[in-house]
Figure 1 (cartoon, rainbow, N blue to C red):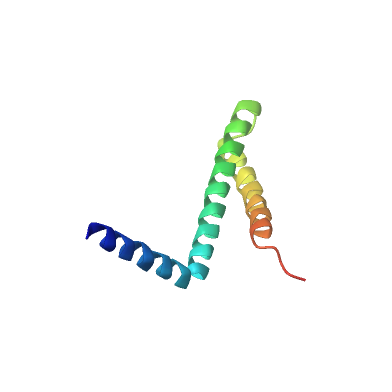
Figure 2: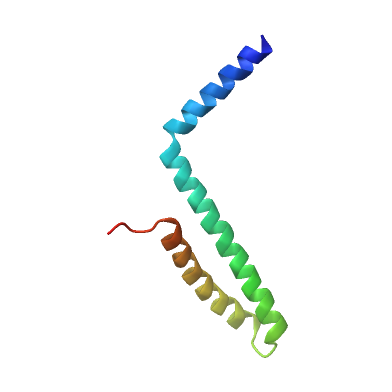
Length: 84
């Protein structure tokens, strides 16, 4: 009896996943981009902190923000290539 209920739950979840695939793809893509952008930003700041001590903290943060936005655009292009 438990196996039938478990099988029903699996089938229900698969059909709902198939129904909402487009939304889920967008959410996954957005999550990947957000995670990559924040990881890139942290790595950029850590790298600049260890190499360049002459800049103030604000200058490093602004430069890294600009680089992370460019990185985000590159990721969006890779994940969603435009069809020509």
